[in-house]
Image 1: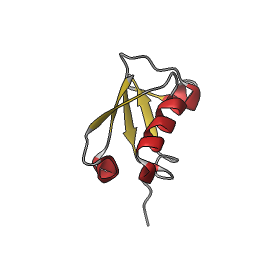
Image 2: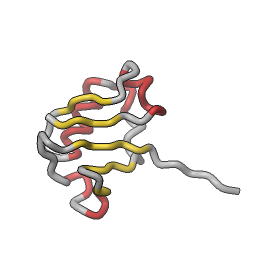
Image 3: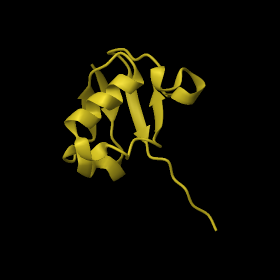
Image 4: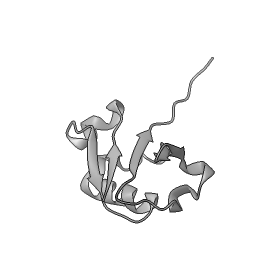
Length: 83
């Protein structure tokens, strides 16, 4: 199981939890586990930036990036804006 840090904008979906423990061997597995336990996260994680051990998964294997029990996974919702 890995620790997943939940950003303030998604804490309402996790009953206010700042960190939750999720199960899985890859980032995809962790996110599936989270969405099965917190269904209101569905659709909100689609565009989230995900970091494993401080490294963006886009520079690794994307959603197939392996995770271990020692890893902390950070979710950051993608922001858009501008004029």
